[in-house]
Amino acid sequence: MKLLLVIAAVIALSAAAPQGANPRDATIVEQTNDNIGVGPWNWSFRTSDGTARQESGTINNAGTENEAIAVRGSITWITPDGQTHTLNYVADENGFQPEGSDIPAGRK
Ligand SMILES: *[C@@H]1O[C@H](CO)[C@@H](O)[C@H](O)[C@H]1NC(C)=O
Image 1 (cartoon, protein in one colour):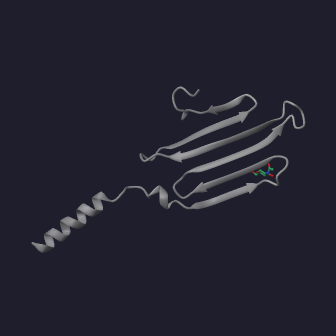
Image 2 (spheres, rainbow, N blue to C red):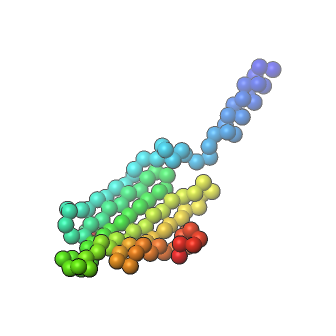
Image 3 (tube, protein in one colour):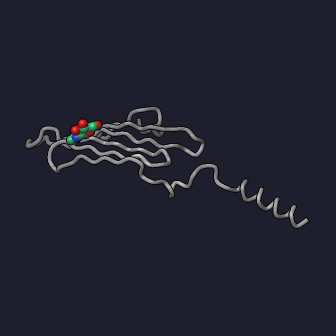
């Protein structure tokens, strides 16, 4: 009887265990940063839970009154159902411009 209870407890515990890893336990598996403080730059990272970001930027019309930061990047993440989503974007003098099918409704 005791053995049955222990077996039942073990089964219950394993059934309650999360299917995916806790996002809080994600670690950085790749990271780049190329930025000397002037001129174009870029950076990126990827974590063990499948999240990734990358961005590159430059200054448009440097030294003029129309000077503007222009960046291009992407965000990738995996939802609990295992699906990978990616949002690409440009942000420049024309505002934030998201691209892709994973843009929340009303933001296109
Ligand atoms: C940005 O990243 C690429 C590699 O993907 C590299 O060749 C380039 O030199 C980097 N730096 C800048 C400032 O764009």
